[in-house]
Length: 288
Image 1 (cartoon, rainbow, N blue to C red):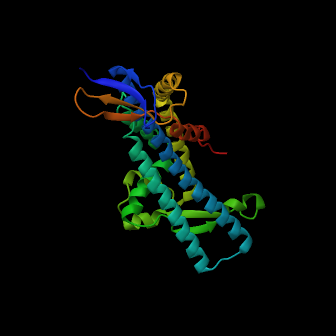
Image 2 (cartoon, rainbow, N blue to C red):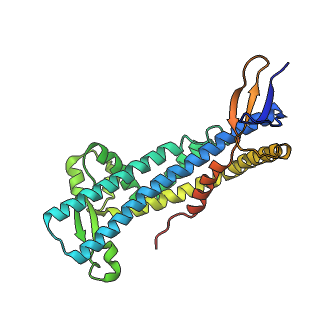
Image 3 (cartoon, rainbow, N blue to C red):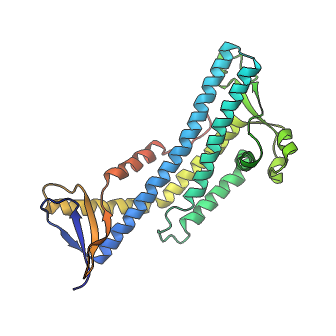
């Protein structure tokens, strides 16, 4: 007796199990890995986007309050700088996690060029194409070991216009402060302005990363579609022989002697979360 492979529902009720071949079992197992990586890929970006939106929302609220409340005390400024540092450092940390982690995704897919290498190339293009991207990449390393990123806040020159009150505060990083502490990437420092508007820099950085994410999503989209189609076909095949549905469907390998092993769940509801995230974040961020 050789190994057998089955589609079955993971419950104790009566059911009609379906015997499948080794090739289909392996394809379903690989499809599961693809969909798991695809979900993680979108969730990492959603975390990054969430920290970016949290900073922008807070910065707009802070600017509005500053524009109408006229609190120019040292204590008030210190609180704003402290909050700005927290938001920017959260964003920088999540951006580093995103950049590092996506290079580990989809390792099982047989691309001519591994997905991790394609991610490195796309991120390198973002780095080369944006001065702000290069600055924030270097700044993340700097703030981890040296100092906080926000050194001062100043009013925007347009802040008297009510239409710009949501951006009436500039969160500034001073090049001279970075130089004094040392340890900042020299080539990046040489192209850095004396005063860096961190809100503007974060926007440019996020726009570059969002475009990279959209481009990399396109790379894996055909494989993700195939994986989902394999799951959908297995579910439909099982439902055709089981009128009470395919809830809890899985596949497993049954050795000649021994208990079933290699159980792979075959469900799609959880993958709908990934689809909804991709749909919500289907466009790259662009400047207005």
